[in-house]
Length: 254
Image (tube, rainbow, N blue to C red):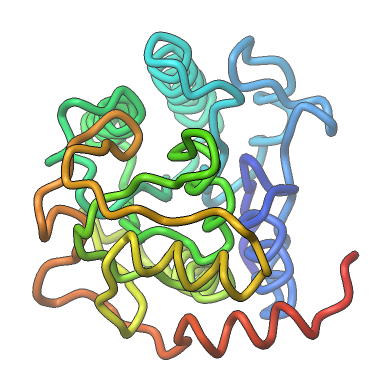
């Protein structure tokens, strides 16, 4: 049994990963400000990482403003690396984004690339998982692209996936041996970003109109047609968007 510290372990992906690792006999410890672990100040990191075999970082910045998100990921990652080295942690795992390195106009994606560079140069054996966008974020994507009663999005292709599948991929990588490399994971369908949001909003009875706009940006980035798609060799999960919508709609809120 491994001791695995999950930074951001109470969030959407982290809570699912903790449950999966625990079910497979690992000691998975969720770490977040609520549990006294603050990666920006370093508070609680020495204590929670003591005796840990692996640290998994699935945390996210509370602000997506360019300077804020860069400060969050570089500061937090630098602190985690420092305390993980002191504790003798043998595997550093992080969740990142398919296409992050291509989206140079996006402050968020630049920050994720900076995070990855710090991990790769840390000297700690590592595994990085690049995931496509989650189905669960349809509403938040629509919110950022809404002008009046219109949602303006490009038709760039995307291969989105369920958070449950993302968590499965992350849990597998975390329980496995360090890759010292990156793997990509994605859903089974190529969809236009505009069509994805249009379908999701229609299913929810949202009256907003989705307008296809090639000039619109996504987290600050004007998209090329295939910028959000994984490359060859990606691990493809089976859950389709229509299946997820039906399941999510029938699952009681918790």
